[in-house]
Image: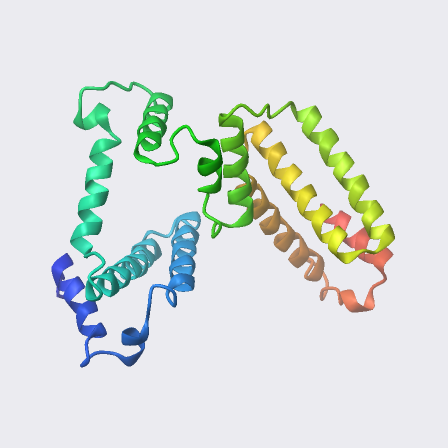
Length: 258
C-alpha cells in the first residue's frame, strides 16, 4: 500500500527541495519566477472541473497546493511569513466573514450571505467608502474579461447606472461605427484603442444581462472548434482541404454545419 503523507511531511519535502541538498531548479525559484506556474496550475484545476474528472482534479489540486507550499517556504526562508501564518490568517478570515456560522448573525439565503461577506470585506479594507481606491484595487493581473467585469460591477455599486440591454446594444453599435471609421483611416493606435472600447462595451452588456462573459466566450470557442472539425472532417468523404477551397465555398461549408 502506498504511503500516506501528512501536511507537515509534505511541507518538509518542499523544504528539502529548497535546501542545499535539494533540487537546483526548486532552489532557484522566487515568488516572481513562479507566477506563471501558479496561473497555469489554477487553470488546469478549472479544466479538470469542467471535464468532471475527479481523478485529474485530485492531481491538479495537489499541483496547485504545491504552488502555495513553494511560496510559503520561500517566504519562510526570508522571514516574511510561514505556511502556518497563511493557514491562520485564512482561518481567521473565514470565521470573521461567516458570522452566521461562527457568530450571532443570521443569514437564511445565499443573497444575505453574499451581502454580509461584502459588508465585512469592506470594513477590512483601507479603501472602505473610497470608490477610487476600491475600483483601483481590482488586480491588474486578472484576465482582461474578468477584470473588466469586476471594474464595471464596482462602478455600479458606487452609483453608475448600468442601463438597459437596448442602451448597451446601442453603445455597441456606436462602438462598431467608430471602429469602422478608424479602420478606414488606417491609424493603428486608434484602431487598437477603439477595438478595446468595443470589447469593454460588450462586457458592459454581459453585466446588464447578468451573464458570465468568460463562460460565454469559452462556450463559443468550444463551439467554433467543434464546427471547424466538422467542416474539415465531415462524416462522409475524406474531408476538405480549406486551402484549396474558395472563400465562398468555405462559407457555404461553414453554414452547412451550423
